[in-house]
Length: 389
Image 1 (cartoon, rainbow, N blue to C red):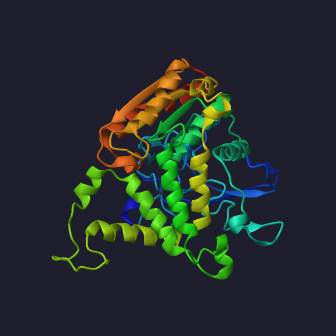
Image 2: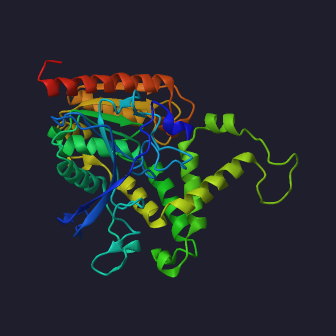
Image 3: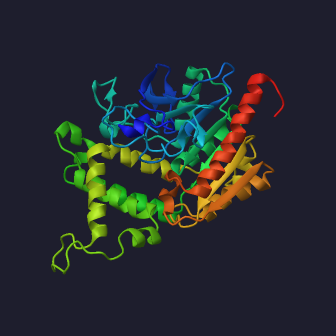
């Protein structure tokens, strides 16, 4: 495949399953007696272990952030635009780690895994997890890898919430934090979108109260609808107008409720393809993770007080047409950090792509992220050699 041969690709990568046998007490009060995390790494960890970067994935992401799993792969990892040799997160200089979070469906312990206590699939009995739980499991992964402090932790959307939690919970374990297209908590509107998505899934006759795999079925229709709703929120009106406008599939109306417009065809395709690769119980869990996150709630509902614990340097990035996590939400984070007297840089990028912009190679965005990460790499090199930055 030509893409694999390119100099700026990490090439073929092999995921690793890391098993943990020390029980993890979750925010819901339940314990996971043992669990696995599916992990990918890119680049080389230096001798002082100062150049490690953690990538936190968003709602439907996983451990496969860059490169290819085989010569037959049509697409690279979900953030291949930014991770690789000479890219913004330069694998010539960084050791990059990305994992599939607990509750996921790409190899880490979740609803599609076997419950060791019953010998059956977890299914809907898998406990509801939180960002806090994810950060705890990620900290244990860092211990396993021998990484005492991350050079940077980077995440977009739900990934950005994980970055915030790391900076609050383990301030001494990261030097730099990059929060992209994110928010300190969901708005009522965002929670409402998530609830519509969940209801679409749970109302599917093939859902069977979450036991669909035991029944040999899949709630494909409900999960597809959930993805369609979500996908609308990831795109801006301008992006949809530019891509589809009111272009019709045929030259005339059919006067029925089939596919009349190209945007309808696109959404149905997205829904159908997603329902074939993602687990419905995992989607329910991931949306709840988003709903629950609110670090200020533990600090008198004061975000400044919550972020006062952070010691990392921050880069906060927003996109003008992102209405799922609007620039105002990123500015809440940046302003709270500034008030807490933390070092923070804020960038609002003009981009028509909406929320999905954080996954794309947009020149101003890529240039800013590259410049920031070059400084992080220089800092890591200085720590390795013991020289001043």
